[in-house]
Image (cartoon, rainbow, N blue to C red; front, side, top):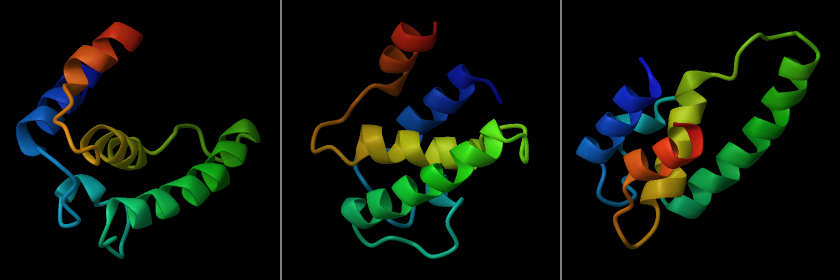
Length: 91
């Protein structure tokens, strides 16, 4: 699944933070609020990045990336357009 597919799916499925979203499947236990979600994401990224740097794992987990994008773009009060933001940055 490429970035364009991911951001299309995010835009299609998200309007604001939903703790039951399948886009948060990386985590076994669901967060009730966007703040709780953030508090799970941050330590997980801090755990994963050194493993990548040391070569213990080869790639950043795509489901974690999706959870990060979901939290960042859709925990806001307004609806963001992930496609525009990501294609501007990565396109």
